[in-house]
Each structure stands twice: as structure tokens, then as C-alpha cells.
Image (tube, rainbow, N blue to C red; front, side, top):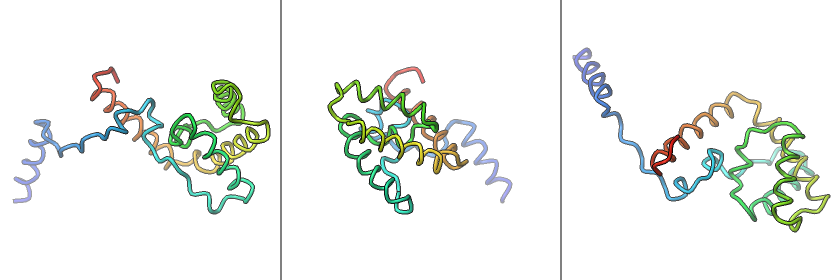
Amino acid sequence: MKASWRWAMVLWFAAGCGPPQIPLSDGQLAAQSPFDLGPDSIDVSDYPRELRDAYDVFRERCSQCHTLARPVNFPAKEWGDWAKYVDKMHHKTGGALLTPASERMILDFLVYDAKRRKTTPRFRKELDGLTALYARVKRERGEKP
């Protein structure tokens, strides 16, 4: 009996009849990058106080122009990488959203968080999942993955 069950499953998957996929949400279909598809917040309860404060500044300022999921899931880890992107965003707003102090707070937070969360195998696995999901999003939109 067990062998016939296994063969039935093999034939089911070989025929492309695997488990049904959950339909993509409108938010997922609107994603502009794989990073938009991940979580949009971070548990910073055990971060140092000044970095929890910096997280608040990050959330308030960066969410003005894009989803927070994008930087939360973006794999940059080094100061220079983050500085490049924060500077780019700063210029896109005409310098209206960030003061030098708030820019420094955001950079300090992003670098600390990256070294804390984004160096783990778990983050790498989550990023691989987001990349696969984004390929599916692009196929659903009729784009090349």
C-alpha cells in the first residue's frame, strides 16, 4: 500500500499537478524588486537604545517614498553600500527629508542591523525565497523573470 501511494505522488508531481499555488496579492504583483516582498519591520527590542531611536527615524523618513520592506530585506551590509543608497534617496527628494544628523542615524541603524541580521544563513534563505517569489511575480505579470 505504501509503495502505491508513493508512486501515485511521483506521477502526480511528474504530471505537473503539484499542490496548488496560493494566488498572488495585488501588493505582491505591484512589487518593484524581490526585497519589496519580504517583511517590512524589524524587531529592534534588544537593539541599543540609540539604534532603536534611529530605527524610528528610518521608519518615518524612508517610508515617505517606498515600502520599508525594500531596505529591510536589501542585502547590503557595509557602510559604503548603505551610504550610496541613502545618498541616492536623499537626492531623489531634493534633500527635503534628511538632515545630516538623520542621515547619520539611518546609516548607523542600517549598518548595525545588517551586521546583526543579514549575515545569518536564515537571512540568506529568506532572500532566496524572495528571489523565487519575485520570479513568479514577473511571470504572472508577463515579464521575463
